[in-house]
Every structure is written in C-alpha cells, then in structure tokens.
Amino acid sequence: MAQLTQTKTDQLVVRRRAISWTWLGVAPFFLFVAAFLIWPTLSIIGQSFLDRERRLTLQNILELGRPFIVSSYMYSLQLSAVTAIGGGILGGLLAYAITIGGLPRPLRDAVLSFSGVASNFAGVPLAFAFIATLGQLGVVTQWLRAVGINLYPTFSLYSFWGLSIVYIYFQIPLMVLIMAPAFAGMRREWREAAESLGASTWHYWRYIGLPILFPSLLGTMVLLFGNAFGAHATAFQLTGGGSQGNVVTILIGAQISSDALANPGLGNALALGMIIIMGICIGLYTWLQRLSTRWLRS
Amino acid sequence: MLKRFWPWFWFLVGAIYFLVPLYATFDFSLRAQRGQLSFTAYANVLNDVKFVESFWFSLQTALATIVISALVIVPTAYWVQLRLPRLRPVIEFFTLLPFVVPAVVLVFSLARTYSRTPLTDSREGLWVLLVGSYVILSFPYMYRAVDTGLRAINIHDLTEAAQSLGAGWFTILTRVIFPNVFVALLSGAFITFAIVMGEFTIAALLAQPAFGPYMNLLASSKVYEPSALAIISFALTWAAIAAIQWIGQGSQARVAGPR
Image (cartoon, rainbow over all chains, first blue to last red; front, side, top):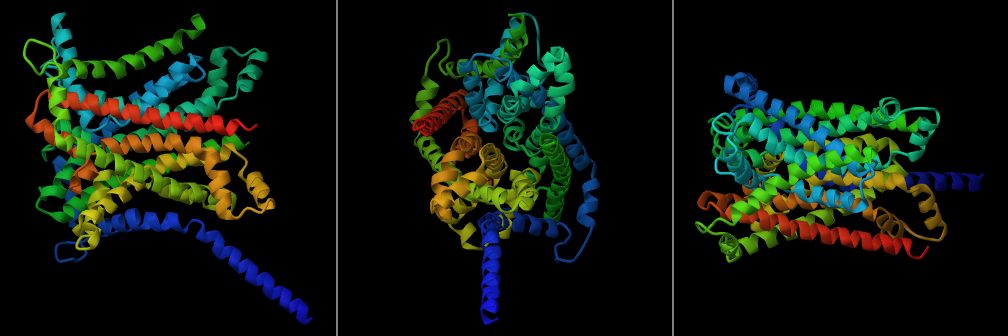
C-alpha cells in the first residue's frame, strides 16, 4: 500500500514536470513577442482612448472622421488592393512558370534568388530606380518621348498609378517566393491521374490545380495587401514625406516625428485604425489557411 | 514547343518588369558628367566614409536578426509540432501580428513604451530595439518557412530515433532538427536579410546610422549618386544573397552525401 502511494506520487511529480517543461518550450518565443510587440502595441491602443490629462475619451476616435484622414485611408486601401491583385497575378504566373511551367532549372534558380534581392529593393532604392525610369527625366520617359508619347503631365510617378507600378515591383517577388514552393509541391501524380481520366489542361486547372491552390493563393494575396498597406519608405521617398501625403503610414510617420496634427492622441487613433483594418485582413488569412490545411488533410 | 509558350511568356513579362528599371537606373547613374558616360557618381559614393559605415552597420544588424530569429523560431516551431499542436494557430497568430502592426506603428509604440529607459537612452539600447523590431518583422517569414520545412520531415520519428539513441533535447535540436530545416530556414533568412538591408522606417525613427537613412539623406543633396547607390546596394545585396544560397546548397549536398 505504501509502495502504491509512493508510485502514485512519483507519477504525479513526473506529470507535473512534464507539463511545466512542455510550456517552457514556447516561453522564449512568447517573452520575445511580449517585450517587442504585444506590450508596446497594447499601450498605444490604450492611449488612443486617453486625452492629454489621461482621462478616458472617444474624442480621438471621432476625429478619425476628418475628411483628410478618411481620404487617406481610402487611398491606402485602394493602393493595397490594386497592388495585391496585380502583383499577386503576375507573381503567381511567374511562380507557375518557373516551377511546373517547366522552364530550365537555371532560370528557376535565377528568378528565386532575384526575388530575394528584389523584395529588398522596396523602399528608398526602389524609389530611386523608378525616378530614374519613369520620372520626368527617366530613361523610359525619354524613350517614349522619342517615339512621340508624352507620359507627362497625364501620368505622374507620384500619382496613384505611379505608386501602384512601383509597389507591384516589390509585390511580385514576395508572391514568387511564397508561391513557388506551393506550386512545386503539386504532385505530378495528380496531373497524371487527371490526364489518365481524360482531363485536358484546362480541366485539370479548373477542377484540381486551382481549387487546391486557391486558399494558398488568396492567403498570399492577403499578405501582399498587408505588405502594401504597411509600406512607408517607398511612398515617403517618392512623395517627400509631407503630412499632405496620401498614404496612411506617411500620415502616422509625420505625426510621430513632429506631431503634425498637434494631438498625440489622434496619432494613436490613426495607428489603431490601421491595426483594425489589418486585423480584419489577418482574420481572413487565418481562415483561408485553415481551409487550405483541412483540404490538404482529407 | 507550344506547351512551353505561356511559361516563357510570363517569364519574359516578369523579366521586363524587373530588369527595365534596373537598366534605367544604371543608365542614369552613368550621366554624372555632362555629355559623356562615366563612373563619377560611383566614385563619389564609394569614397564616402558614411556609405561604408552605414552598410557595415546594416550588415551586422541583419546577421544578428537572422541568428536571433532562427534561435527563437526553430525550437518553437519544432516544439509546437511535436508537443503542442493545439498551440499552432496561436503561434501563427502571433507571428502574423507584424502585418497587423506595420513598421511605423511598431517603432512608435516601442519608442514610447520604453522611453526614459536604458533602451532609448543609449546607443546600445536603441540598437537592441532595432534588432528586436527586425526579429519581430522576420517572424512571419521565418515561421512559415520553418513550419513548412518541419512538416516535410517526420519530426516524431526523428525525435524518437534520436531519443532511443540517448540524445537529449539540446542534441536533438542542434544535431537533428536544425540541420534538417536548415534549407527551409534559409528561404526565410533570404527575405529577412532583404528586408533589413533596405529598411528605412524603423532605422530612421530610431536615429540609427543604417543604410536606409543614409540613402534617404543622400537623395536630398545629390542627383546622380542615388542611382549609383541603388545599383551598388542591389549588386552587393545580390552578392550576399548568392553567397548565403551557395552555403545552403553546399550543406544540402553534405546532408545527402553520406547516404
């Protein structure tokens, strides 16, 4: 009897140790995220509901309805949607071409490593490159002028479509880097099985390929959306970073460095609005991800 | 031949989109001297001490970021798949938060929350904040890469095999899991490296002497040098990424070798 009790105690001790050890395994990750992300962000969110005397207020949130703030949000949303779709389609097709498209292996490696470099090309140097390409004195602008097409003043690199073209440059490589492994993971057997049952290429993609890839494609495009929505440096370099800049991140950036709205609380509320929109995106992404794994499992 | 038409077509579209701006930038960078093509703009940039300093600074920051990110993510992703599969959506949620909290918001939050602490009052402290933010930014890419890599190998069998041979957790992580996810880890590392080297927002707002803020400042005073700088940074980053890739392929060959 005493021995039995002893064994039970041992088991309990072992089990308790196992539990604490199991959770300890993920402690470093959570500590890191808490220190560098969660705690700072939560404190900013909390402060967007406080006025200067640290009393609870909704004034900061209500002030988001100012026309220039609303138009700034709309501008960022449209820019993100256009570049996520454009970059997603072009990047997806490129990822397809270099994987199951059957292009020579060296080309595939070249595109993948180029994508690694080109996603770095976002921000300041990317803005430089496009000023040299499509700016008023840009090389392509000059070529087109030589054949009688004047881009300016109808087109401007600093306009919505100009910014879109620049953003898509860093959207494509990100799409390629994430989607190429997914395409490469498509089994040859699926295709062969479909073909042996008489499916054409169109049938295969319509009923097998795209449905398998769809959640992953859409999920990645949601990531691209976030990538564009949170982008700051490229637009900053192109527009000069004035507070009249149309992108939300520039508005927030201007608020950080100079308190351009003369109200720190409004800056916090701007950030909160951005976090909410991005939160909706990530919710969508998570849902798609679950869909994707469920399909892959069954 | 016709079967290969569309892949080639899309490849060419991508190539044009990618290469024309690079060509244009290069062309532009050669025009510093009126009426002739020259490398004057490049010489000006390379002779600038601040260029070398800022590039070196960003390189060190990038490597520190990749190492710390890998040390945090690999054990976490491994442990979650092995023992805490229910926690996977939670971890995924947290690794995706950098998309919810863009760089501008993140750096502002950090600067405010840790103001009047050693983290914001000293040069070293600001660097810690910089690397910390970059590690956070790298999480979505690193976790995706490592998680996919782990799913491709059978970690349960590998862990049991290692344990039956007497390996402890540290040995399992360093000698079994890390080598097996190394190549997957590299794809995450490429993106991280790319992000850090060109990053402007966080570095500028933390007043760090990084490459991004340096380029931004140069553009306000020079016309042709920024193009030269864009080409130089592109070429150097390309070389660095090619080197990492080469190391990756080398180790892949080494892993496959003994079989």
